[in-house]
Length: 323
Ligand SMILES: Nc1ncnc2c1ncn2[C@@H]1O[C@H](COP(=O)(O)OP(=O)(O)OP(=O)(O)O)[C@@H](O)[C@H]1O
Ligand SMILES: [Mg+2]
Image (cartoon, rainbow, N blue to C red; front, side, top):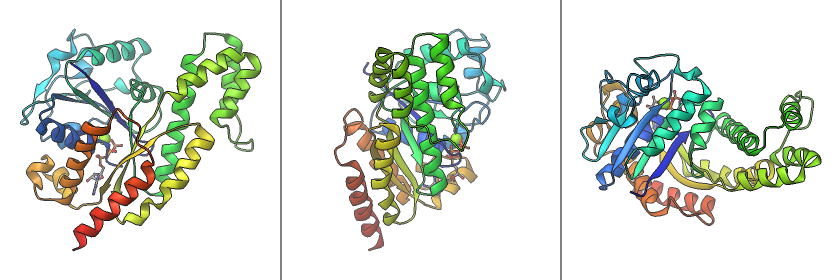
């Protein structure tokens, strides 16, 4: 089976990752795709509430504590045909601090799950573990709102992700490692460390290593979703964000989707029901379905002129709803 892994991350917390993970998974399942949605927000697992499930199920925590040898034995059927749920660590706390070997075992087993879409709801922020789950594929999804704090935190997340990819591409070499740590530990008075700057510093020690690191990094192409949008002109910032990505991060990305703020979302949280049950006629359900449709058609390909295209689509949708 051709499997697409979609890790969902964000720099800032509370931007809508779990809501989008759950409801995108349901929308894809309704399109007839075989979907698994997994809760990888260790220490903050709440994906089950967005799926309308009481979480008494054993989950990844039990797998890592060796109570289960295969992740697939922990998959739970949901009310939605084609959609299975993999619980996090509600029953076994402290997994946020899991050991490197546990993480690698988890990643290997996640890759073996059979489905067409594997959606991973990650914790917010930039711990090594979260960065590594995000790096399971070159096309991860990042959620942000248009607020300054949220976009700044997204930039920080992506920068630390770049450093992590670069670090992991390098051979174990004490001198290089030291150089890398020196670069990270600059004081706030120093110039901001860009991805180019870091690669240049590595290049002064070993040009081949720097070239290899650059090749590893430029293969990534995250897909950005703007959530909790109130007015289409909030998306005016996309152009300058794109420039910053190029300049500071040497990163190509796609602005992939926009979801508007809708009071129906808090209803799903309050009632612990899925969106299609709590608010079947809501605008936000239409936004989610549009996103799922784009995922099935466009996920694997770069989107040309994605900032303008998203602004255009969001404006049309907004105006249609005003009529
Ligand atoms: N499009 C939206 N319109 C209105 N409210 C929204 C929207 N998306 C999310 N929310 C609200 O934002 C809050 C956070 O959502 P959610 O828990 O999905 O975020 P998260 O990124 O997973 O958070 P965390 O980082 O804590 O895991 C919820 O209260 C939800 O009701
Ligand atoms: Mg969450």
